[in-house]
Picture (cartoon, rainbow, N blue to C red):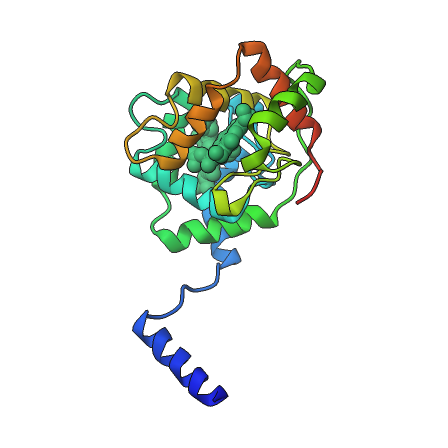
Length: 212
Ligand code: HEC
Ligand code: HEC
């Protein structure tokens, strides 16, 4: 029986083609050299260049965003100048495997959690967060793979604020076909004021290091 199952699995593997290769960290490191000029050698980000920290993000989310930058769902027409800057960078990665390799390398790096720069009321922000955000991004803001929701804890607070503003004004998430971006646009619109954005960001920043 066991043998039969094994040979059936073998036939399935042949039918679906070779399994995707493991991520190649060494190749990822080589590819990351371009990225390091803005995101930093440790992927800790660079506020002066508006390039966010990356190494708190899951590989699957990094790959998904790189794909969006490549296909124009992010960083194309109508996007912010920062976002448009990132699109040609993603295009330097030659193929899907390159995106996997660079994402694995980014995840292997570590950097300090960025200092707080946004003044907000984290206690008020907690109320908004638990009501409107936690269902997808998780109680500790660690994200949820099944819902395509990224880790937010550990991100730069100025970047979170800029992204929420971008979802609200349609410079992110409004391009046809961007299903997850559209979902997030609806959620960003729920926050009642600019101050509420700052409050929720202050709460998310306070979750950094909260773990999975
Ligand atoms: C010229 C500077 C620059 C370079 C080089 C660069 N980036 Fe970026 N990257 C940015 C900026 C600025 C943003 C923020 C875009 C925005 O505000 O929408 C960004 C955003 C990202 C994001 C989205 C993060 C998130 O939380 O959604 C990922 C992933 C990313 N970059 C990966 C890379 C990789 C991989 C490379 C190398 C192939 C790279 N970047 C090279 C400037 C750069
Ligand atoms: C229905 C599920 C859902 C809810 C609820 C939700 N989000 Fe999201 N959020 C997502 C998804 C999916 C993405 C990824 C969007 C993409 O692929 O571009 C995202 C992305 C984000 C990003 C961009 C992160 C980055 O690294 O670029 C921020 C910031 C964010 N969400 C904050 C919030 C806040 C604050 C709330 C509550 C007001 C919230 N989200 C509620 C699903 C959700």
